[in-house]
Length: 430
Ligand code: FES
Ligand SMILES: [Fe+2]
Figure 1: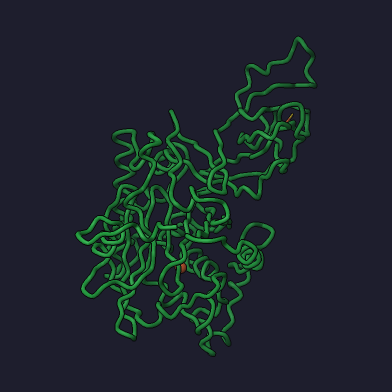
Figure 2: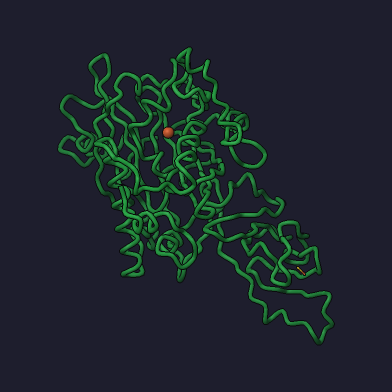
């Protein structure tokens, strides 16, 4: 449990808050590349309590500027893309991709005051299948070149969905190895959205042994389960500064890939969950994932299952033991239920943590330490500025059977080639 003050520190994200300064020290995904193709339409973006508009100008250059016109606040996402910028529909003011006001057509020539107008803008770049922005002060760091971002596009697909609660509830659901044996329990067969996978690993041992350790990029998380055939099944997940995770796949070993996620605050009461599905070898079946996602997400960017329809819970589905939660076979929709119903900002002064919350406790400690470091030194942890160092030799995300007597740390050292009998990094091998 956290004190009231600690809960505020880790959940408040607005400009000027310690948590907001920490989060603004990093690049964040704001839209998928598919949402903003060449010639794409301007789209409103809410991030870190700011309303912005992402657009391409008539030369297809990307810009991210304040949503509300600097004149009298009309929504620029409805504007016209022309003459080197985005033109407001109300009185025709024109803004370029850097937020510079370049035309005030209603003003007489001798009365124009473009040069006095300051309009918010942030740098953007496309990388890893999404468009990113940096909202911090000073020189931007590098976007971390994790395997799932730096890979060829045919190995990866990205989605985003809005969830109506504080970002940390999303992150905590994604780092929590114990809940998969309950919330996501379901009868044998595909876990929604994941072909060929099975929830059997979670059902065979509902009391995983958990461990967590620090890494250069955040924390590495281990969950070990005893299988009925005597094997030990290890899942490796990661917390990545500031709001990322990489849950491993749930297919039988060897792992074919994993997911990368970012829980980007829109404000303190909602966040955007970005999800990258990454496959080590071959070509990812993007059409399959796009169809599965399309069936779960409504036009407003939120899951079809939501609080207003009680997450479409079906108690007959529970009685048949088809699923534990009665909310279909999509794990993200089940997670949405769990995190949103904890309140828009979970009151962590009232919770009762158990031994299986060790990961939650340690990630919070890492987060509080990172916020403190940012406040005291002006430098958030894990930022990279040298392209030569933008590699992650200690990164691993997988699910596998370990050798007898091996724990998560020993397993990772071995497969990363860092242990006494270490070989090549088989997880990263193409
Ligand atoms: S409100 Fe945009 S030009 Fe007047
Ligand atoms: Fe989950």
